[in-house]
Image (cartoon, rainbow, N blue to C red; front, side, top):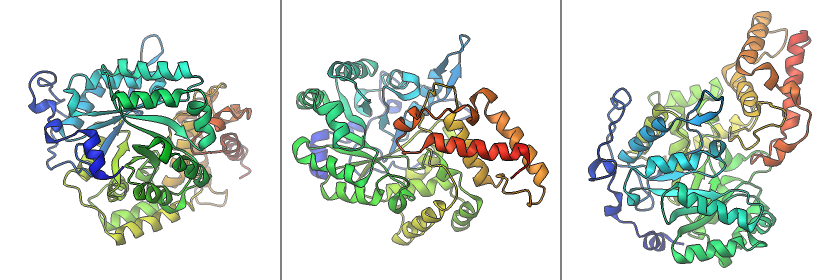
Length: 443
């Protein structure tokens, strides 16, 4: 679908962009937290496709609080505040899924968004791993209820990696035919899929475009994956190029690699800071993604107001990167892959572990130690005993004993669900082996 067809189908004009802050009725009496709203942000939100802000809100990393019953619950007041601020500054695209945040994300997003005029935002959500036609249909209808609407702007077939996965979940059981009919009726404005897989799998999904006419596709894209996608993942450059030449709008997920490009090894972060000391590390990654005209929106799971404000500063009165800056970032991305990091984005798809292991927490602690230089290399290094003791104490503090890597039995359930194709039991075993050497002082 080319840009003109997209605009026509979306039916979006400047009138649809009126936000609650300047519209009567719902949302007009919203008051932002005074401390968080003191930072003045001016400028116009960038748009590659009229009506859709280039910065999109990924609703999978909102803050959760533990209630008196021990269960974690989304902080709805915090979500409302973030959504209000995002809308006020031109963010219009909000992406969720039934499986996000222990199944609470869609409802929380629906509560926050329903306080604003329906034409001031776009809802994107997913059909997540349906085991049957009835399950998929129920999931779709529940999404409509959570969002208090009779249509979804963007609906995704969640986390496909090849045609077999598509046929197993959507094709053979008639669910795809049902969704196509819903698109025809206008209850689904745009139908697409999110992709996690290799190049051959992506080609298989592109081969279905002539039959199903994908309205958009969501891919993992950042300046590391552009040329150096890890594991069995497809290069972002290849996917973007294939989508652009077909005129299919691109939605970007993991522009920060789960936050790893905002917390990089010191040598690389120093290099970025030397170029633009006033810019954050994250802004480099978001500018890279936003510099490609076929991009519909760039998703960010902004947990805190400071994350939202930093990203807004990037996309308000946005300036695209030069070709030289893009090449520079790709060279940084190539060297980033040389560090012994685990390609975990913290998506939580591997959770819960049946044995209680905090898989994302362990990987985050390990990656941070490499980035920050606290990783103990050998007994020959300076201040070895001090560094060894500190590392072990910090690990016990970050990861409770009953949730540490040594409890892994290698069942492999986590690896089957990992969109990054990480061999999770092997990585946990490697980390546990390293920790045991530190404890025994045999490193």
